[in-house]
Image (cartoon, rainbow, N blue to C red; front, side):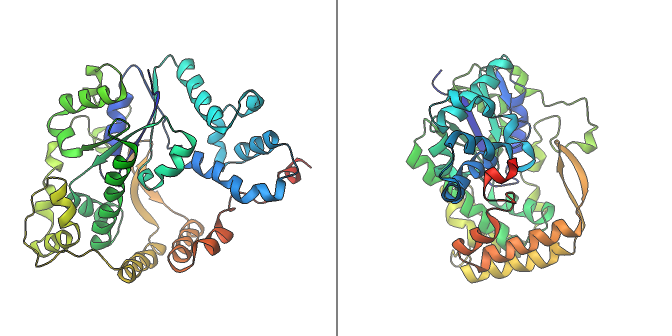
Length: 353
């Protein structure tokens, strides 16, 4: 098999969790329970910022320290950092660590679901060039409605984020190639699950298994499940009932060109198509940012369960300032303030004293 590692990507609220659940039922697939791709990228990109302060130290000890000190120890659960001296380079360390997990669990392929990872494919491919990517696309109007409702976001900004995320998918596929970057539709997965899952298995170079068609989970009651126990086609056109014609026209003005490119039919005929300006994006994003600062209770997913989350004011305040400076400051200033948030000390030897 040429590739044993794959990632599920796509704009949030596009069906990444559904696809993860279906693939997790395959007897040959080891799905990562919690997203790990961003931890891999962040940990090893920190080398650029931190190595200048630690250039005098043994590079393997330095790498081991980075992995051990990654957020909540999640990366240390995956990476074979205790045997780091056995690996020629970082790519081999990551790849062989994942292969060991596959073998230990008697599987054939390992996968991770990380929504919005399509924006960071260049960083991912630098570290794991053999990875295959499954990019799932949902009708932009349904996605914008779902994001605005579930994530408490402005609907125009949600529409724009759908455009941005899926444009990345089209460009990524042109760069990486269709053999390693597959774009699939949420609606087709719901309407023709067996056909679409067969196509996905062919792409991943594994045999199709009917177990993927069974989405049941005995651990949760139906009302608590983030993903239903069946391929729920009622979600496909729900946005038509919930959105007003004016709201649909606003969304289609932003998304229209890409909707048509991806084969979706428009419901209205906007006078022109125009994406949001940078100024309006920042304004709407900060408007949402202020509103969410004072919203303690929110609905969300935890361990694939639909739950009410209670966010502390400290957590909300940190998110508020992060979003604020990310919009208003240059990247070098932002990195200086936030890139070492999880590294209380820049020098790894200090943590050993």
